[in-house]
Image (cartoon, rainbow, N blue to C red; front, side, top):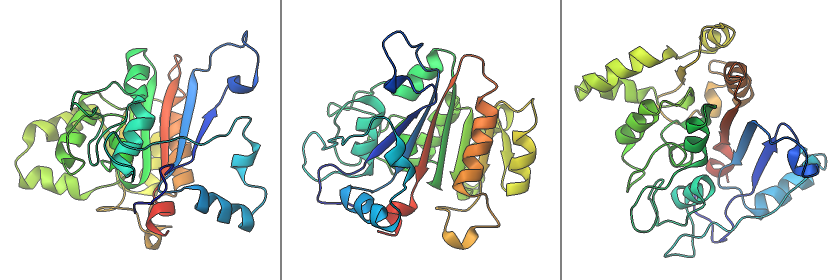
Length: 259
């Protein structure tokens, strides 16, 4: 859903070391979680406040609004918005992880990876959807899902949890054996809550790919597939084993889909 507001999403950044509220001598945080309420602008947050005045976001030491207009349009969308958050660069509608000149821009997740941090992408929509894609891929169109998956696996992102099991079938149908082999070599694959719980507690699990629905994870699957909270807990358990730290993106698609 595209909103007419130029400020399309309110981002909550949780710095686990709470450095943003401390003085300049505080050690830099090495565990960072970005929480996305997809498609949520000021209207959604206002309505949420009316429903519950004790929202967790109100307890954050620093809050604000971010202007995510694209480079050539006033009406934003998930792709340019996520690209702006991930890379600090305005982009064109539909483009992922590139600037208006189509040149790839380094994302915060990629920078974390280069520093030896663990990395993770968790969402309640397809794992290759625009928001998670912008943090680990660079393509001219968000529709290039297999290219996005390839780049995520190439990096590789340690934790990939969300929807998109249909892509596993597409790999077979299109004969993409190299990508199939790469996924099998690098990841432990799960498609159920039980498997996710077991592998997240296994100290040998460093890379996990969990796809729990063919596409977006609908509310009707809750109970049969892990909740966003369960996926996030599992992701943190795995990433927290990296002594250097980690960067984790967590997206709730429902705030967009049901708006």
